[in-house]
Image (cartoon, rainbow, N blue to C red; front, side, top):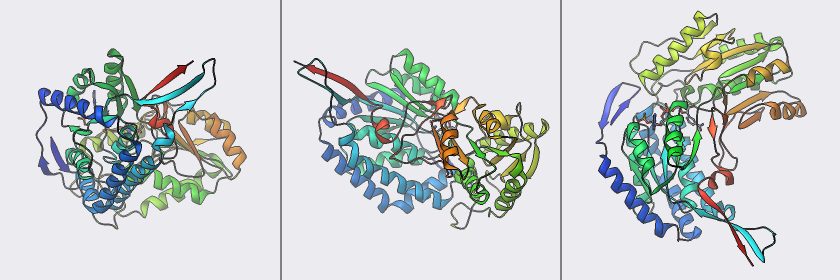
Length: 452
Ligand code: NAP
């Protein structure tokens, strides 16, 4: 596996892959280790996750630099990612026990209750875009619940994958509670088939989700899927336009546009279209391109050359079909996977920018006549991850939020994940939830105990 710096296209390091036999042996060791782990107290596990949070904070600079070097995220976003992982470890250390405490339910029994018990070894298949956060938002709740984990990370972040495994040991966890499998995607199905693996979670694209969920279904094992999105951001005529522009900018440019929940389709009521568009062009054109390690940089590289090629193709096809390129959409003359943010106007049904997930810095603006049309366009997608809307009438905002087909709707604010709130999608954005108590209950046996 190769670690390549997308800011320079230079090879950083090569890592050996595990063989099929090594994978089997790792899964067996993890399965053995989890037998003792699942009997430990929440207090003990919580102390270890607090240590984990402290280890991450102590090495924030080193870990953030690793993230930036491997996938190009600008350094202050990498630092924030590590901090968020630490916060989530602390959060589950504090709350896991109360989330999984027995629930007494009155019935015809003398005493009946629900117990939440760990399933065993969980396999996680993870993406590169938040190489620490995606892993910890699964691992902290699942391991606090008494499970153990094996993780296959994206092939372009092998350094992060190994650093996470190392962090578990540094924090004092027993060996083999969390292990990294250094394998290509072609070896995932065999790992799912291993009898000790009880469930799988995948964060990634639709095709990967479909393949992993099919393999899990064949084995009758549970799967949670966190997939892509083409999130709408609606701007109504009574919106605070400055706030709408700034939020659009922050959401679409975060992580160089490579975020599942970044707003991708900007659905704007025609009476405010011109003002919104000119505000957005002014805001985007003020951003500074540069080295992602430079704290002043606002536009860094995308993560891989093929991602730039795919995005450029979607943009060109949309323009060919009648979209207007209002700003950017070019490659600056520097090495690395750089792509200048593009603003597309007149985006319509039938264009890739309308229907597909654009996983990079492209703003697709769609003009609508009314609130009803805005809702219809927002829902006119195979995805259903999240949505944003701007209106100064909060009652109106709440009514519209209920009509939007998505796992989350944020009114007058940027969509973000938060350990206190459930996270996940509907439609082709996947199923199951992460975070909050909904997330920690995905990988437990919700067991009824009836006693008379
Ligand atoms: P990806 O290509 O689907 O890869 C995700 C992970 O799945 C990687 O570890 C990849 O391994 C593995 N994989 C790919 N094909 C597979 C297969 N057929 N069988 C088993 N494993 C397979 O996605 P990505 O490019 O890394 O990430 C971007 C996508 O993830 C976007 O669509 C984005 O919206 C989505 N995403 C969703 C969420 C969410 O919470 N809903 C969060 C972040 C990202 P290799 O790297 O070895 O191919």
